[in-house]
Length: 253
Ligand code: ADP
Ligand code: MG
Ligand code: MG
Image 1 (tube, rainbow, N blue to C red):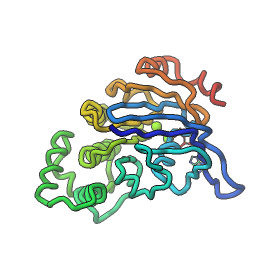
Image 2: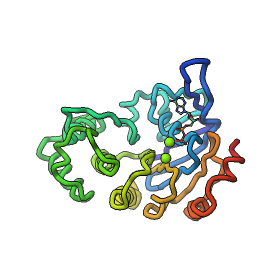
Image 3: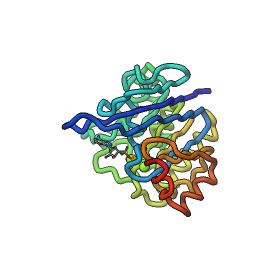
Image 4: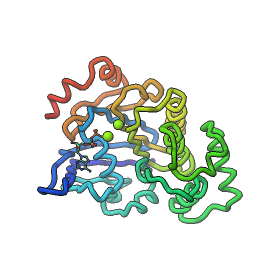
């Protein structure tokens, strides 16, 4: 049983010229293993900033508040330490790495998180099974990391990493609205399998309500103006789908 606790988190982003701008203005959020939380909000409300701050992106400066995983201070950890502690942050490796295959990348990631290299034969079997479960073409394992990946392939890779790394808490920033329905289903089934197993807590960040037709979150948090302005159960996602974010934009301003 793991708990990610975010308390009164304030985050600023440097704009490179006249100082910095406060984006997150006091975020409180608790995510436990087996729970799926959706963070929903209009563009520019700070959703990705929250994900980057949890991930430890150097551009996002935490000016107040805390983030802990089972009581451990996440903000004091290096990016690698966060991964080893059981945090999975989908945007951690968005870069194209020519010459590094998906398979090599996954083996390094698994090694880093588990603290020892899995035997090649064992790892290959594990990876094959995970890829089968996600309906990923076996040839995908030999592709160069992120090079020419379609939106759907990026998402499948994200979920494949989840299957292999089995994190305590996964933060998924679904910035890609270009997923086709098949990819959306694969991603959603992956997330649902995780939450059903009860070992992983999922923080699903999304602007669009579409993915919530396939993933039923236990909790929905509406984000506006850099803070949570409304919370509820899955029914709140339906309200948002019908009514949009307009009234919350005013509330968050
Ligand atoms: P969302 O993901 O909800 O669309 P973001 O967290 O991406 O929102 O952005 C929130 C606000 O922070 C926006 O006004 C955006 O311009 C600003 N912002 C985010 N990242 C940066 C950055 N690296 N440099 C400057 N401003 C940023
Ligand atoms: Mg975003
Ligand atoms: Mg999004």
